[in-house]
Image (cartoon, rainbow, N blue to C red; front, top):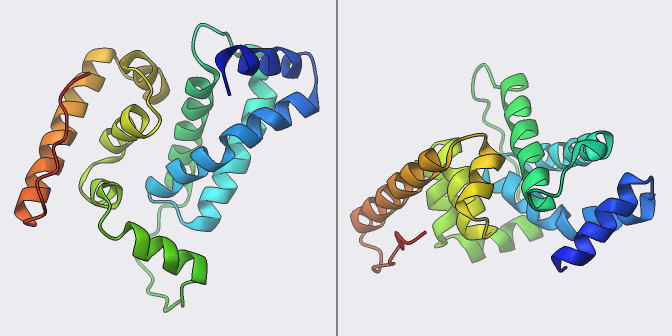
Length: 185
């Protein structure tokens, strides 16, 4: 969706159009869900957090200003909701449950086994992972990443550099083929 269409939909949604808001959410639901899953939320928790994100977006839609892209605003809400869920539902002790994966989860697991993102999720802290995902996965610029994670642009640059270095070291330690992780902003 181009920015002009998105801004038109946002404006109409701010005027009370449920159809316009629904189109916006349809545009972003898969990407937000994937982002939440990669942050380590279970399928059910990611679904709940996604719904809470959309609910908060609807409630706060009048506060959105087009200084930033709508996606930046929406991902900011998702990051905050994921943080709230993590704090509310932090397990006291890990519980092992033998659960058979669904066919879809099995296919996703097989397809992404050698993917860089699961490794990143495993070795990076939440803030570094979010910054890396928003920058590379969602193609946000440095300022938008900073706004989404509530940090300065300098923080984003430093933590992107640290995350890339950490991933490079992990790939090298695992003797994986040399994937170059760009340092360019």
